[in-house]
Picture (cartoon, rainbow over the protein chains, first blue to last red):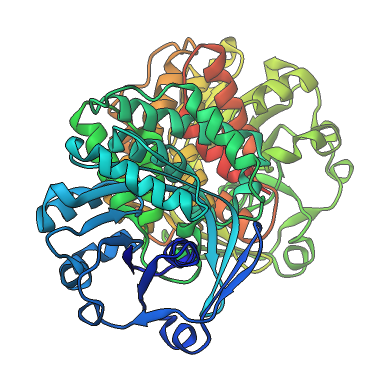
Length: 301
Length: 301
């Protein structure tokens, strides 16, 4: 399958590398890593085994790639204004678009621009960080949950899941991608938010009994807001503890992407991860005071 | 009146200096500022006019001071374990003890040690910071609200208020010192807590609309907890806005004491300002999730 990876951060590089190793024709739209990857290929350090791809097709402009079968988007959501020039040239009549980005609003914007029928949303439970240019570190997990924005496209969602599974990525197709999005927010809001605000990795937060309780309460707010959105099935309250257990199994030194963004002075994904979920909660009359407090902290100049 | 000032931080030095200037026989129990004050006196930089007291009675041990009529306590509340040796030698049969410390629990501990009949609690609305040894900066406000722990001692509370008023400190005696304590907590918990956690002065917080809203919500939690404690009269909900207006009138660069404590690596008054109010709320079934979150942040090692 001809695949273009747009937004080659840790997530895009890691999944793109696996898809290429799995026999697909993968083209990477690159900025920071362009020179390193075109000259030296892509090095994956993974707890599942390191590997190196010597020949990687890197491009600076989407026009140079042209139309593909599948666009996989790993952009930071604050760059979504650039969808037209980054994604547009890749889209032909049969192209599918899968966004693996965080937060709310990505599928909807892609649907407005390119038509809902081709849009798929995926949620990645991946611990990975970029290393030196041309290098990605896979630190844990990696499962993807994906689904079609348009319910009739469930069969294609299953095919997409098969594509990832064949490449070695545990992947599950679900009927309700919005439920999967909110489930990911149950993790993202407290962990991305608090790790970024406090500049501490996940393990340091979970070492504090009070902080763990705060994380659990923020998760509770997100679950309540999620279940007010008319999901096909509710997120069960137990999901909070499940996510805490999942996080306890990670390396304690793991830094979520927003923590790294803050460390390195990049913009934060506040709109997709905090503003939109808060707005969605507010529209349904759900109070999210702890989430709002976290947003207030993160937004301070 | 023979007065001993125990805990000569910004608050103790400032009020002690005013009481001495007002004609009282004031003795200061000193540590950091001992040499500077004994040699060069005490310099007050005040927006009401600077003044210098060339002769100040400084002591290193309470035994050297002996029994006084009034002990004024400005210690950090985490030093309350030292009440016996710091306050004990100053107390004779007729001695009154006025604690101007922050938070909950100070009056009760003094009552256990020295008898409730001699204990008075005062709440100081003072913006002051210590400068170089022997120097105190009065940056704004200064009003004291005080009352007797034991209701029968109201007449003495009025006398104490007169003592401060005569020295130029606006001072009001109230029947219910616990209400005054909680009113001060309505300010202290959000402003001491958030300024210390975020390492920003009051003005930077109030420059953010979201942060101001968070401050208002934390104040709401404290007011609800206060009004569940059986105060003689409730704190009205408007009090939150009143405190925000009061703070907007301060110099925006004002750093509450807990912010300075954190900056300078000293212990924080978490027990008196956060743990005890949270416990008091919990005992009455009042949820204080934002206050608990703030405590969790401040307690992180």
